[in-house]
Amino acid sequence: MLARVALSMIRSGRARKQAAAQALVEAAFVFPLLILAGAGVVQFSLWMHAEGVVTAAVQDGARVASSETGTLDQGEAIARSLLHDGLGPTASLVSVAAREDTTGVRFEAMGTLPAILPWGPVTTIPLHASATMSRDRFVP
Image (tube, rainbow, N blue to C red; front, side, top):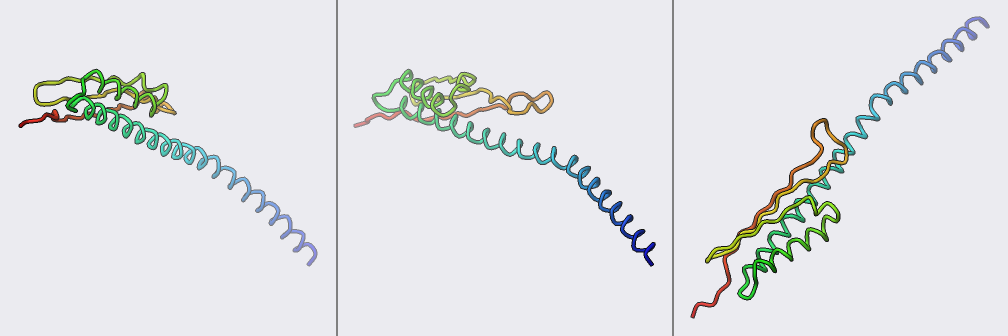
């Protein structure tokens, strides 16, 4: 009887060690995947924020430039200011192009956002937005 109790204690100790080792191996596989998924969520959030900033910048630039007293230079200055305020140092990676004709103005911004983790050959994420507005004018 005593031999059976001693044998069961040895087996249960061995089983505990095997379970702990199995849990360690599982954690070693799952933890990097969780970190990668978390980094993906953060990168997606940063990209959505940057797209929103770029879109708002070209819309406001076009709004200012299309006003009755506005000029294309004033609109570009507003767009660049909003890009700088919203994106910080990465605003230099986004270019703003503006053009006008007799009926309206068009602003377009193109650039890149650096990836927080380079995903293979992808080290930057593209940003693009455009806005077209008709000129405000008084017609009697």
